[in-house]
Amino acid sequence: MKFENWMALKFILENKKKIILPFLAIVASTVLIFLSITLKASITKTVEKDLRSMGKNSILIGGDSITSKDIAFISSIPDVDYYFYPDSFKEDDEILFKGYPNELLKKMNLPELRDSDIILDKTQFSDRKIGDRILLSINGERKEFFIREFYEELNPLETMKVGKRAILSQLGFDSNVVKYDYKRVLIVFKESADSNDYIPMIISSLNIGRENKIKLLETPDLFKKINKIISFLNKALFLMLALGVGIAGFFTFNITMTSLLEKKSSIGILSAVGMSKSRVFRIFLIQNIYILLSGLFLGVVLGYSILKVIELVLNISIYLDGLKVFSFIFTIITLGMLLGIIPIKKIQKLSIIELLKV
Image (cartoon, rainbow, N blue to C red; front, side, top):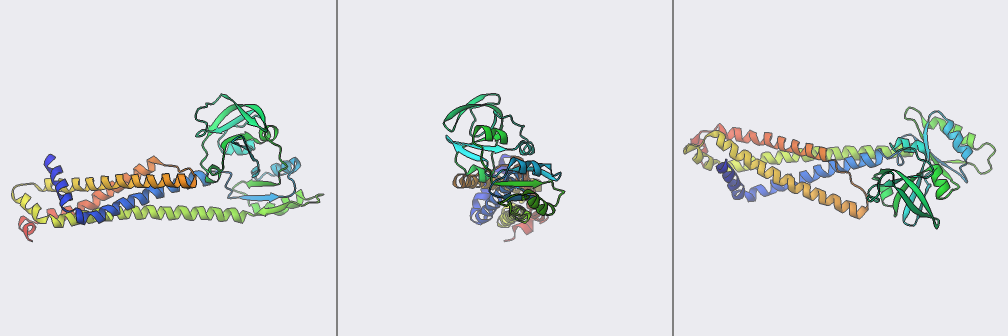
């Protein structure tokens, strides 16, 4: 195999001027694939999976005050999945406290919390562990909390906020941090329900005997538009992915064909001195492997660097799905090998006389 490796490298160096553009195309397609897989996974993990951003089936209502009586009525509606106060957060002593109803915590696969329990962002409190007690300053007073769980914040809308993130139950937030006079509430309905049907009933029921009326601030149509945008972005990223794979395969074929045509006479000489067709096949197969692997490596490094720049500039979290990236890299290598075999097979069918023709 040493001779085949040496010949493969020799052919690459001798054809470097003609190989460079297809090689750069493979690098670019790898960057395209790497970014599309990672960004698609990040959108899914941060937006589609983040229940607070959501709501495929949500409405936002508000007024001068949302009372406990209003919440009790909203919670009693069978098709209401959960509710959430968008304004239930406060920064104090560099800690960003957020209050989530236990119904929302369950939907986020987090445990229900007592008033003294807390959930911390694991990236910001890496020196702590579950079961620890932590003292935090709130309104100038030191309060002790029991660390019940950790979570990883990926939502770019949340990570752009200043402060270390800490989650309390809604009751824990009201009793330990500050009891707001909440003016807005996001109501999320079950997927099977039509939230539009409930809007008149909810608004009219909440406004009975009320001087300052509750109003509909955002309709389900807005949330549906958001989800349509997310769907469009996912489709666009999938097209980028398909384009990247296609480009990589095409230019691998192009590199092999260019190299074979340039080295046709050399192949003829090697065949004339007794080299078997299988050894010729291995030389160009090894050449393809070297070019593909180096192009893929450079593409992944560039793609990862671009993602790191995006993270630093926009202060958002990027989710890297290593398994999917590896799967598509394997797909590119397999496709490249298969497409590279086609011109090699054609050359193998030529006689020594045909190969030696200039």
